[in-house]
Length: 223
Image (cartoon, rainbow, N blue to C red; front, side):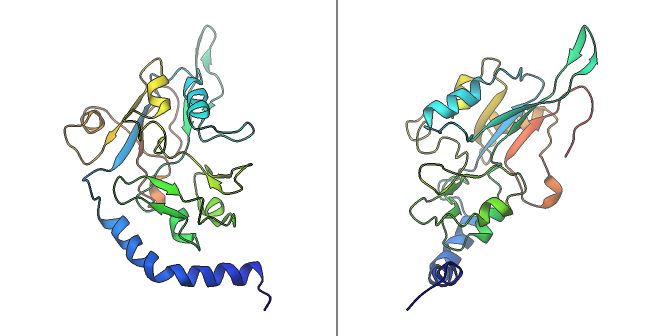
């Protein structure tokens, strides 16, 4: 019996609905280890050197032509010689209410209940690109070799697994990145959130992103 791609995705989605529904509820409400990882990008410290991008690519074996992390430089602000640039981190926000997870027909996109990281299981991904279309931050891509959805995973399978900080955090020469457990009031990230003014990108969408930003001091903050 022949089966179109659409029919295949529909049937697979139905098969994972029962197990996926229970897992989805768990992922939305519980963190097994009391851990919910997040990150702060201090835009007042970032110099746009791209060391974070290079480290991410090397540690996670990201092929040329795609990127899990990009630093976007603004147009020059101010007059010579006092010119400033705003450097914006473009990467997965690891949303607590992630649209990419909601639309995935196979359960490949998921939020890990143990640590809050939004990730992709390549063994379940069929490359339908629904998650890419649903992500309001436009940070997902199809891996040119694996042909499955890919993005930042906070170095979950590499540095975190080895007990290290994410590659971008370790490589930043100005310490513009802070990573840690948002649910631990004594963590470095929780302390910084209490001390500094921060914003989150596209917060009004209700995605509950876990990447915070210390705003650039010059010009406007665009959300």
